[in-house]
Length: 314
Image 1 (cartoon, rainbow, N blue to C red):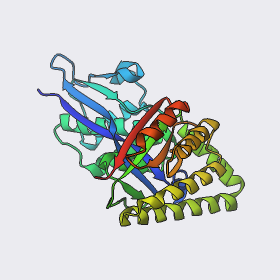
Image 2 (cartoon, rainbow, N blue to C red):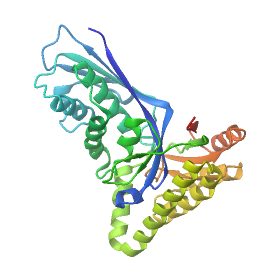
Image 3 (tube, helix red, strand yellow):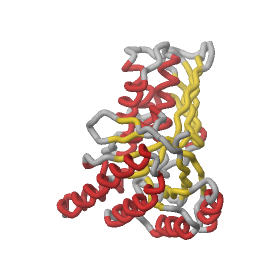
Image 4 (cartoon, rainbow, N blue to C red):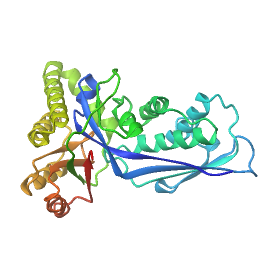
């Protein structure tokens, strides 16, 4: 029996993080240079229900039955089997690998889940459609992030730039003119659940102030969508700077992110901001292809532990 393999890309949020949890729009795009992969192989000698899981990137080597029911990898397997009404999973092995940095705001958790759901449902003989993959991945995202917005599972599943408002159908953005983003990793794990919880606590303490910040972030996301779809990508730089300023006021930046954002702007980036939950993780910078290497080198010199350059569209 052949092995069943599936991949899923990473992602970055261009605009609207945190505000998206409160019903404002956000824009996210896939990062295809990094990806998660899941491979399911039948085990003819195993007993029904025996699933051996190998995830070398996180040092996991265990049987499905030995993992807690709410373990993210186990949950993805159980959800796929449940959705396909498979009561007894055929004996198999599941190997999960990923080149997406963990806890860096690049959607590692969502990508791993999507890859598992696709590979496992194919192994069970009924590949799940994208809509169901995204729906189930959202359930697993709750284990990672507590109260996720839903944007990660959508952009990772469809591997397309998306405009997303919580509770509304996802909208794919048309990229009429490609643009280049440099991503700089602080090397500090980004505690998404904690950052989201802290913003909620601050919102509860001063709702008017934070609602105004969220409104401004939503307006920026709408302006960014217009700029992207009209091909006026130069306008994205100032919008990124403005969005970053709002995130600073929300309390989710940190000295390391500020240092990298400043380094990118000094090196000629048209705009830069943190991306994702903040308190660590990644920042992003809008550049032209001609200065991408210059900005990437500046980020490395400023202490970024990893730098990626990705083209959005095209």
